[in-house]
Image (tube, rainbow, N blue to C red; front, side, top):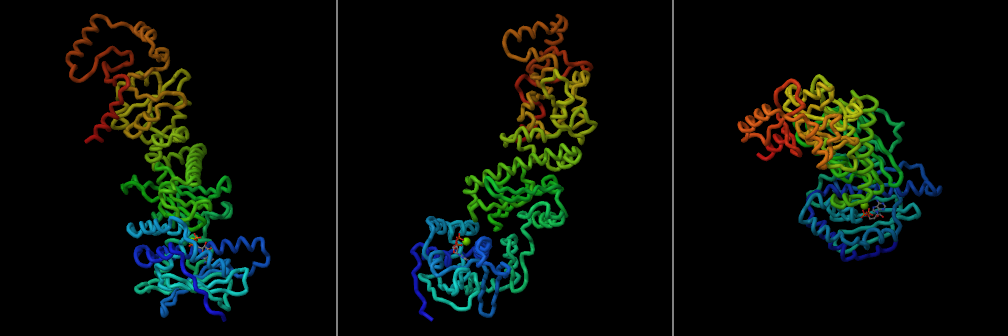
Length: 555
Ligand code: ADP
Ligand code: MG
């Protein structure tokens, strides 16, 4: 047996190791995640190679093992993946530090926690082993080699490599645990960490003989091979909300132009309606089945925040930081695809079974409609998904779509009408409705001020202006010719209106005098049939209901 060769770490790595062993005390458990992630990568590589190279094949199942040895205070993490040759050992661990990693980690040493967990992003995940250990041994044999090697370091300035007999293919990382870190030989503690970060690793992870990650990565399986029970189980795992199954789920897989798998779940109930405040759970983000973030809020627009789910993409770099995620092209494209697919899924539910869609809408419509004000790209699709009570229904719980409204409207109706108010019955008594009722024109009754904001924001649907009937912008069907602002047509409008008689002018001025503190003007109207008078908003003004809401917000 030859003497061990000695190597010095590259200067950057030395500093990095110093930081890891002395400054970063928080969140040490991410070291386990990094080592599992490396093991899983090595298994991926071997699986890929064995597809083409017959000689690399064997009958051993690919797996990852954790072997805690509390007596000697050693934790070994072992895989039967590709392993490393002598030269790969030197090249992969010890000499090359990726630029930027040190800067980043010195900063992280101040900020703690979250930042440190991004260590893998810089291709230095392996060194996190020194957060747990004051001595690390790497025992490895490459699938190409007859002999194996032992790499060893105390994480100060150097490492040694020597040949080692009787090694299986693959790699074993032996962590000689630091003082006070005995917990890392505790099965329960290890299981907790593995469940947290590595549940969906696609290889069995075992502690001793016990399988820890029984959860299959169901999102990479073909849809037709999955049972409802499997979908339910995964939903329960993700949502932890006491529901046995989701309202619906969407399972998407794509290979081009970029690769991703995704399962999204819509819950039965909207927690926000139950008084739990804003939904903040986000969705799980995996890169090659390794969890990168379990509460990502940027993969879906805010107005779909009620969905639970997981997105896995091999095209996403592992452990990318939150900020750079938003700038990542693949990421942005995935978000775009997901949003469109969710909206078209909702549209298809509505098409197949409106009642079923309404059940969804009663729960989540209040969140979904926010999209009208924020997602201009999908505005049309979103507008079709909106539902409101209307004069066609008998109560506020009967909801109708804009499309259905237009199907019922006459050919000559160029506007979509709505009216806000405190509640359905109060709105129904509003004298502004008389002419609409008489002419059989449908009006949306908006008792929820947010609905009014949404509709005034939308402003137009399928070439029809959306107007509040208590505004003077309202043009009844047949009145549209007076719809442009040219002086000529304004004059015509004057002419076509029956002029007020001198007696009536007197009445108007008496009203005007009496109400001068409260109204802008008092005019003759042709819209009323039964009531003697009504209040309308001046042209261009926001509706009375909306004014109430806005003034509430100012308090
Ligand atoms: P990254 O995983 O981003 O490449 P790491 O610091 O985690 O960075 O690992 C560095 C390299 O060491 C890996 O790219 C791989 O080549 C090698 N390596 C680490 N762990 C293993 C392992 N269990 N089996 C084989 N190679 C490994
Ligand atoms: Mg790694």
